[in-house]
Structures are given as structure tokens and as C-alpha cells.
Length: 318
Image (cartoon, rainbow, N blue to C red; front, top):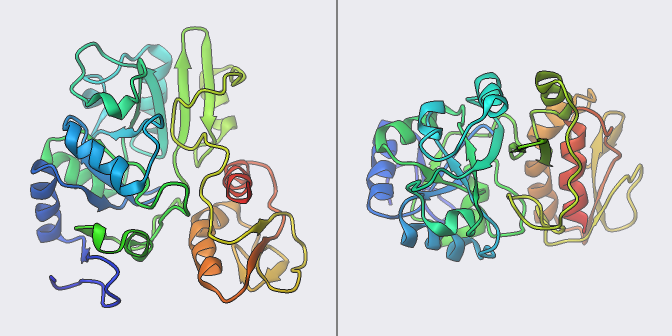
């Protein structure tokens, strides 16, 4: 094991310095999977053009093959090799990239991605991440990287390297450790349609911000088909039952508070929703590792990024 490895033995963790990034690039080019930090959560990355590498993502996560993957690109020019951008999509990319927004767009004919990346759909989900480590890996490798959250499918998303290692154990060959993820929630996902746009998953970029930029509200999402990550009813779930909108804990519950509701842990004593979002998954990991039999979570205001927090909590409790 290399310097910086996790002393707990839960898989391999390496500080995300230049040597570790170079090793990650070498492994990705060889068809391996690597866990890489982003500003949202840690991602389990593989070469999006390599069918066997992409299949390894699905196998390692235990992810259903009808659930497409987000492809990470270094910039807008790279994204245009994979998807067709209209004026609205280009506007969203210009305004919010690099950053926590994923765009679902028509797939470019002949785009160099494995069919499993899109789950056979005519669309592709793309994101240009802001995190310097993921950007360094993208630029040094020259690859498009498919990268869902680096955890077992359906479980709590990882915002620290140790979360990744505990989820996968020795199945993870390399985890680049750059500390906690700043946003702490998966990206907002927007599908750009011929007749408007749809919000497929709320996230750090809010509905209000997107509506203001595009000058129109979203179209309703009426179809039940899975077109992007995070649309499954049960997702982001701890191993224990979760009770929402709990001002007080019941016996045997680990209580996650918010604002004046203190609890065993508190997402933000100041009632700051951005801080709560950044701490949410870490708090769920802590609660899940506690000796309590279940988890209770204080009410979270359903506004701004609170909409995304409540989306994750509802799916965690389903």
C-alpha cells in the first residue's frame, strides 16, 4: 500500500497529489475504475468509451443497467463532441459550467461512448465539473469519464474518501482523497427539450436560477422512465429506517437536527441551507454507523437548495 493509504484497511486511499493523479490517469487509460472527488460527491470514474470499463462501474456498484451514467468533460468544446447543443443548452453551459449542473441532451451521432453509458437512450447526460482534481484527471488523461457516485448502488452518497472505501472495501483499487466535497449534493439535472426544459433532479443549482436564466418555468416530468441518475424512488438510503420532519427523536433514534433543533448532530446550527447540503450525506453516514436502530431528521425548509435536500431525504426514507 502506498503512502497515504487508509490505516483502517477499507480499500486504498491516496492523497490527491500529482503522483496519485498521474497514477489515476494511467489506471483509467488501462481500463480501470478510480474514485475521484468532485465538488458534488466522489465519483466512480471510468473511460466512457471503453465498454468493459463502463461495465465494471455497473458491476462494482451493483447498479441496474437501465440507469444511465453522467459523463464528465473538461469544457464545453469537449461536450459538443458528445451532444447536440441548442441555444438554451449552450446558455446553461456558459452560465453554470464548470459546476454542479448536468445537462441531458440529444446524443451526437457517432459519439465515442459505450452504449451502456446512455442505457441505450438517444440522449446523454453531461457535466463539466469544477473540482481541480477531477479537472486535472480529465485534462491529463484526455478521456471522457463516466462517473456515478462512488458507492454501492442505492446507498448513501460519498462526500469523503473514507465513505468510498467503507462502501467498496478492497474492491476499490484507488481513491483520490481531496477532503470533503464542497457542495455535498449530487448535481442538478436538466433535460433540454425541443419545446422547453425539465428538471429531472434538483441540486445545488436551483430551479429559480435556471428559470430566471431561461426565462420560462420547467415542463412537468410526466413519464416514469429513467433518463438520468437519481430518479429511482428509493436512493441515497442508509441501512436503517429514516423518519423525516422529526422535531424530537423517538427512543432508539439518532436525531439529525437543523437550526434550533439541535439533535445528536446538526446540519447547520445557523439554519444555513448550503451548509446543510454540504453536511447532509456525512451526517447520514455518521448516523448509520451509530448504535441507534433508526434515524430521525428535523424539518428542512423546502426552498432554494432545501428542495434538493428534501428530495434526497424522501428517497432515503422510501
